Length: 412
Image (cartoon, rainbow, N blue to C red; front, side, top):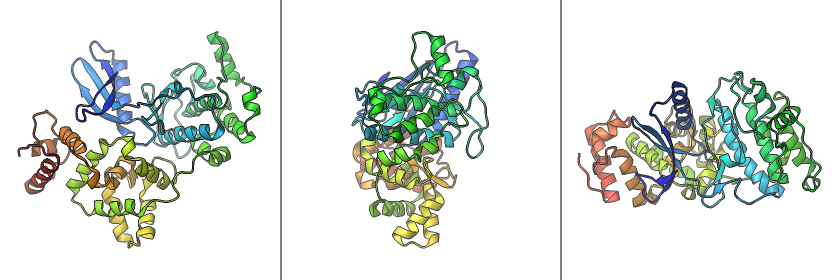
């Protein structure tokens, strides 16, 4: 369902509604799991959860609206290798991020990737079947048993009810096959026959479309569609495949000095104002963050959806000629979660220039703070979202700045 964001009336949002009337315990646990996963995700190519509303009757999850539509409905098949590689790179960045954070999607398919309004950014959506799993460094250790997903995309081992997160990479292999050829690798009108073909890994690369493709593209596809999940390419390995590295866009060559200098200015601000900028970052839309998104992905050298503290300190020391202590202090200022790394929204909070915070952004942030829509913000509102260590004078100064900047009346 589409709607209008309460805190940003000009912004369209997607709303997922679930009835809580007479809800079964299993369904309630599934909803809690989906919500927990969405709250943990923070990546340029994963749909963002903006708000949650809960009543006795229903649960509403408010997410950013991907106005460019589904990949399936984009009318872009089949594609040239460069175009397909660019889209697959975005998908793999999202998938590698999920797996590195212990999340398996379990329903990857064309319709679960959607474009931004300008059709330049692809994001993964629909985490209704997703699950947290325990994993060591590298491949995971938890074997899942619930048979789920979509026929034609589901991995062979899913039908045996013993599978790992490698089921996602198989599904991405199916998507790859379709993008490059315009056809599904596994198809049959009979469901049992379709499952049997999938379990045997029975597909062909003999159409005219495949004859015109490079051997590297074929190898990439085959490496994702290996029946044995232990021999199947992982998402992280796929990002390093020669075909993807040769055909996908390379992104920015370096991060601009102005972005790095914003980090320095951010670090010098009070903890309260840094938290406020984090709230502003939540309200930013894709069109406002293109340069920052590219910079973040460039600095995420391990492709895990975060910049390590060591990596950021190294960049600040080398590029801005800072001493190690100053670089370390600045990095700590960005690390809201305290996990010794910088996530995407943390990076946006630090690098989005404050002079670009137009009235609509400030009003949206004000409405997030004004939880009861009473028309003003007080210190209790700040305390309610976690800013409990405020001195009265510092909290008052923030409210004065916010209200003056946005032209909003307020009370303390």
